[in-house]
Image (cartoon, rainbow, N blue to C red):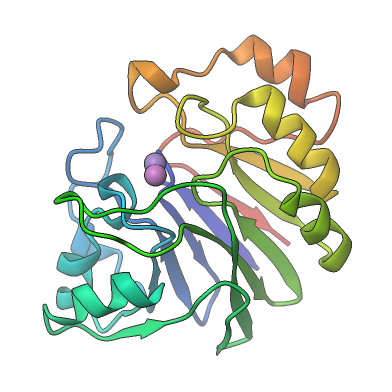
Length: 226
Ligand code: NI
Ligand code: MN
């Protein structure tokens, strides 16, 4: 059984009995954060989709306090390795084995720079195959025809898609992406963190739900995939 926990923004924990994977662990300075002790999470893997601070978040601190392996692009891995943490560089299409499955980076239509403006490589999404299920976390991305290709290549059980607009797709774009991805279930992410990316619930009803089954997860809550 796979459990998905939503920590707000793009921050998601995916776990089963054997492995814990956190994606974009943005807790500190995240206005939505509900976790008081981030060291209690103890992930095995930390995936960072791109260098923006709302995605790198607490990666270095969590990795230092756990034995987590950070998996990200070459530029991000190169930089954070200097903090003495365990990190593995993968790039778009790059795949690695994890216990019970694999993970693979996918293209995203977005930027990636560190807070000081330094180049942070390419922004990416990630496919995680675990216990026979395929989960897609799109990272930050605009609407791109890449979704169509991913939908043709992979049998996606769950797609975590940004819907807040402004920096990424909005709900209408996410509806098109959902159609192209042909995912069995969509969980919206990257909304309500700030006023600029406020979600209007009626947009979900009007645009997304007619296209795909949708599950909104309250921040700090989990749901299970059987
Ligand atoms: Ni971003
Ligand atoms: Mn972002």
